[in-house]
Every structure is written in structure tokens, then in C-alpha cells.
Length: 248
Image (cartoon, rainbow, N blue to C red; front, top):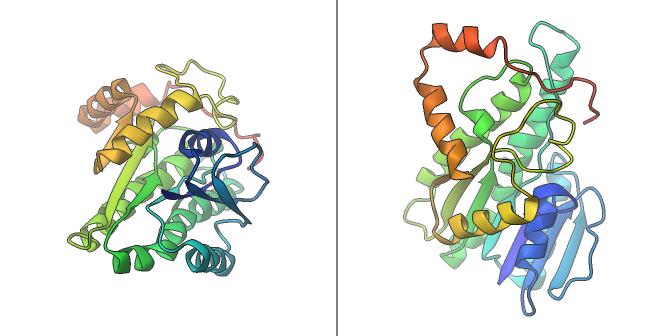
């Protein structure tokens, strides 16, 4: 099995690398930092920022030339930080978050999609978030990016319908990673990265169009989307907020 993972150097991406590490597999890592570990799989590591589209395309072409079309591409690279919509300084944070979480995800999948379409199979996976279902105070940039990711993946799935290539959108809840460890509020149904990777892999194998993990967060997300706007505004205004002083 040939698997490409972006954002593979920490958090969810690192756990996915461990999960798919098996003798006979080929793992392609796209990350800004080195991916630690002694792997049983054959590894092709590319030191690339997913917002650098020419470098990303070159890395994809190198992987394709050496190994052929991958069976699975997981666009996992993502960043997040607290933002306030009434702070002009936070617009630059918004720009960076959108570049990584939306443009970087799209570029990662697009770099491999033509070869997979030509091969007539494979699965493209984008990691979004339950934060993409409603706007959360103090997380406007992150929520906007994940909402855009969900919509982009839905459009891509329709575009590739009938090609043999599946498109899967994964929406994690709270996962115990460096991104969430800065949160100063309770995180219900928190999962370890390794447990999340196992559950995510099941959803990918089943080629689910959209999977919320854990399932309890799916129920919470449905309930949130049913709350009328006037009530949601009042309730959300009192919700805890993500720190704005975390580097991205």
C-alpha cells in the first residue's frame, strides 16, 4: 500500500504515520520538519510547506516517478490559533490559516489526483474539523478554514464521481495534540492521537463521505446546527475562547 500524509511530523499526522507503518508499504511524508521514528515501511520524506505549491507539486512528481500513483493521500497539515474578528492584526492570522488549512489541503490532493484518476482508483482524504459546522467565538479563522475545507471536499467528491477515486472528509473533535494542548477549557470526548488514527482509518476504509470522530461529537454538531441563530449567539458569546498568543 502506498500512503502519502501531509503534516506527518506531529499530532494526528504522526499517529497516522505510525498506523500505516507496515512492512511492504510505502509512506510518503510531506512536512516542514523531520518525521521521527524507525519505520518498517519504505519512506520517502519531503521537507515541504504545503503552501508552497510549486515545491509541493515537485514532491508529488518525485513520489509518482518513483512509486506510481498512491492508494491513499491524506491532507492533514493544519494550524489553528485564537482570533478576534474585530482585531485588524488578526487578519494576517486568518490569511495564514486559510493558506495552510484550505489552499494547502487542496494543493496536496490536487498534486496526486490526476495520477490516481488515470490509475482508476485510490482515496483522497482531507482532515477538516467539527469546528467547521458553526462559527465559534475566538476561533473565527479556524472555523472558517474548516468550513471551507468541508465544502471544497464535497465539491471535489462530486467532480471525481465515477472516476474510481474516492474523496473522504474527516472531521475530528478534540484530539490530544500540540494544537489543542494550549486550550484552557474542558475538551469533551478527548481522544489520543493513536486512538483517533485507528478510528479514522476505519472510516477511510469504508470510504465514508464525511465522518465525525468521535461519534459523540457528531451528535453535538447536529444539535449545534439545529440551534436557532438568536439563541446560538447568546450561548456562544459566553463560551471559552482559544488563546490568541499561540504561535502558528
